[in-house]
Image 1 (cartoon, rainbow, N blue to C red):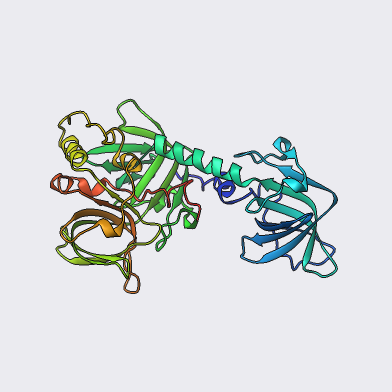
Image 2 (tube, rainbow, N blue to C red):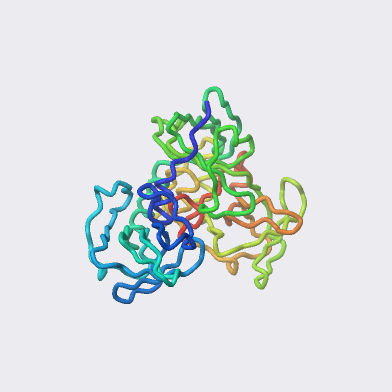
Length: 364
């Protein structure tokens, strides 16, 4: 069973106002008599004149005409029947707008007859809700098996397996080969997922967490690197790691989008015990609880930095594949994992899930 391409409206709303109401915005080079549309973010506001930065990266002058309808859509909504009328004085820099109107005689100014607005604070609220939903109801791991006929995927999550079931309503995205940004991910189907891929699914789980009926899936091909740090280049923002699996040195790049965390020693020991089927003692005061999968636990830890790492540190990394021209880029790096590296299946614990690159969390 093939999954339908991912529904656009949720993710479009995260990046801006949905094209649901009017369709995609054509270029402003259309004939002067034609109705044109522009989608983008407000750069400047001067009375009834707006400067808009379009999604194509150009700047357009918008002149709101007398009698123009200015509608505010609430978070997550796409039906204009649910919009409310506002005034031009309510518009602010960074608000996302879809503008409809006709070109002025100068062929550069768009005389707007309708402005559909999603306020900046509404976008932030929607992003936070989406992110919290993914953190609360998702699970991630390494793909072991894909059954396109049954519409299911078997994940390795630490030392256990989880069956991800899909339905005709399940949506799927796949990360681009050389990007860790959620906004660069593309629509995909179940046959696009392969053993060895990293996958995160959001949906309802059964009681013991061994099955999840997925509403949304995001997958990609990434590298798992586990080993010891042998060199740190603060200038180039890179690390050299002696990979335990291949016995080779790997240089990885750390960027502003990379998520870096360090496990407290007692938490690392507890996680290692759990992977071995041993019930760990209760987490001591000040140490995050061990409930949830590792990526949910990581979300409760403070961020670490490259400056905190030292030669000889044991680390686990999920990165892009890299190429001859581009070293692997770190998506998630976890330090303080000496105990975890002694546990079978540790390499499948991390998934490409971070507050920067996660669904609903990328505001770049």
